[in-house]
Length: 608
Ligand code: F6R
Image (cartoon, rainbow, N blue to C red; front, side, top):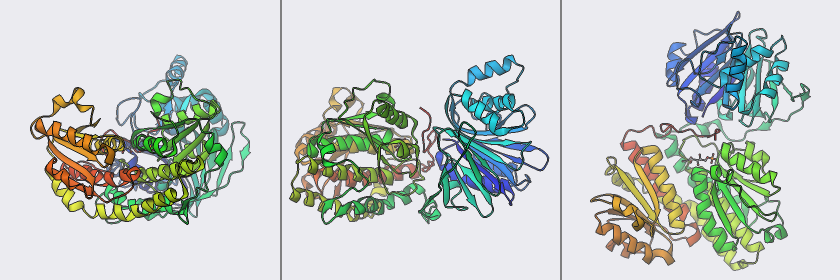
């Protein structure tokens, strides 16, 4: 998705803006631009394509003098990727420049109204309506004009704004799209993602919904919609800027896969004491937990897949009836929610538009919400009644790996906590689960060290047309994630199927040599999955099986077997996903794909 950076201070702005935009490249974009006040006027340079096109155009920023500016990477929504549609957008005499993340839903209405008043629009973007509307309302006071515009526009936005009349200021505003501001020794910054400014400052302010920030080189003032100053506290960012660098790995995705043992440990250890699960961040009492009528898990993409796994665990271990919904479906299906229900929201970024909307829907209906989130201070983290953080650190690769693994851990911990409070498991059972959980980091490490074998196998499939993943129960949930990882980064068509369902149509796609990855970690379902393996093999499939150590009879049925170490049946997802992540990664690398930034995708999906 789009990225915003802004700076005002002592140093030349353009190189700083370009450097910040580079840090946001991982979010996915198709054009970029910067606007700098050069001492006389606002100069704007923008270009379709990668940031390096803009860097060449500006000689790495050197040919754009000035100490105040805003920059943007655009992921097209309204209007194709082009130089004209790139941001910054501006008014007719270029005295107001705007960068924008999000969507202005009523832009057409604004455009029609301003066109009738003689305004000429040159781009197809919704953002230009903001720049032109600012021009319409501007009478010398930027804050007043911004407030009027915010009262008129609908949708989600974070904005960075320059006024040529006020070259000693950068303005910023937001609603439902993230934006942070920070002060450093050399000046003040804004960014849509803290990674863009982390090398300058670690103390940042999260701009709230319907708040405006005015940056000068000395400091930042925040205002509410009445134009009154607002006092805010800064938050210190603990994680190291190096955590957002590749650190010797070829790709962020590989680095993040290798961080999984640590991520799992960091997310789990503070919540385990003397063999028991203690979730300090959970405010719910035992009574509250006992009273949960139904659990509704709502998320998108991989986060949704953790929910599919977790459904089996919450239902079987804690005996809580559980629904899992894709957020974009949940929010429009008028879900039946009871006052005793718990809505469990899962999101790495904490900014996914549909997931955020689902959270708000639940809150509007007065239902208790709990969010599992990675990005501290994100919208979902701030708005949910309770938050359980995944301590995965910044995840840069578009395809999630370590945040996914950390989300699974949060589910397991919650399930144990819920099961205990509801009297579904004994003290001894809890201790046994905890003992298995504590082994996971080393077991994941062991599986990662097997990468050479998987790389070799993956190289055989870089020319594949279709790859299928099958499994039953939790193994089906693992299949869904394995399939998504593969298709999103390698562009090979892939589908995940409940193993028993394939024969109801899809099996007709199996031909000689089609790869079918069969996941068989669930003991009670093992013989059933083996029958399904036999079915596809009979039709010519080549079967890769992922199963538990010890189930060596699998060698008689499958063509290639990967074993995962023994763990409790509820936790096998955390292990079985590792070879599937590695497989997807090496197929994509073998094909020469842009692994960290797959085409058409964005890290944080802030539009619905
Ligand atoms: C896939 C992937 C996406 C995200 C989804 C939700 O690798 O990363 O499917 O899981 O876009 O994002 P968050 O978790 O940020 O809400």
